[in-house]
Image (tube, rainbow, N blue to C red):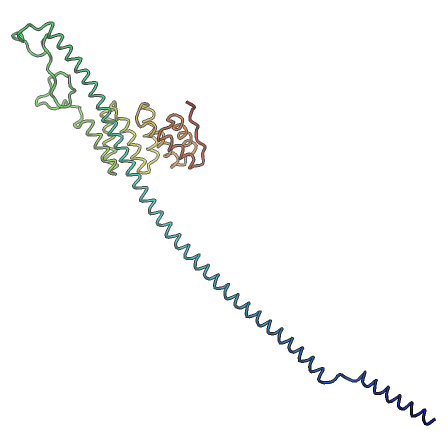
Length: 325
């Protein structure tokens, strides 16, 4: 019996020791190792967080710098664009003034050429008339005059004698001398200046920008020489003067006078074109489109027709189609 109890006691001790081992807390060194590992992991996380924050701060500073540089570049670009726009406006103003001066000079040269052509035509006609007159005189002299010269008592103008050619200034070749006022002065009522001189004076003053003086001279030309070849040009330049002074209403009236009174004028196409542009200046778009299209139809292929087509495209209107040839 004592031996059994001894064995039971030994077994109890063994089970107690085993239970103590199983249910007793872990050793301190194992806990410390886990704590150390956990601390290391936390430190790594904190370090990664710190690195991420540093990277974010760096990126933010870089972005701010780039944004500021972009703003500075934009402001500089705006400043440069403003300066460039100012330069372009100045160039356009100077170019527009130069183009206007060149256009006026070109028109003056064209008119001078037209005047020369008209005068050459007149001289050619006068030369033909003079030749015919001389032939007629030769025939009369050969058929009626006695040999040896003039009969006694005959004077120039007597039948059978050749009439004397006029030498008075302003008289066309072939005209006869007629009695006039004493001293050879021009008969009263005639203008004191020739048509050519008056027209050239008006053209010179117009191209020189002396619009008021040129208007008076062209008006005098039309008043005193209404049937001359350049009367329509003078009327056209009245419109040009009003146009240059921004008096578009009177300019349109002047161009209309050329169109209605001088249907064969050298300035007919130009008058119709400038009338259309003056109407645009007054906001009369419908009338302007109609007149510009009329220029295209009537004067197809001319410079005025090309300018009319360009103006129509500029204001967003359709151009007229030139009739098929």
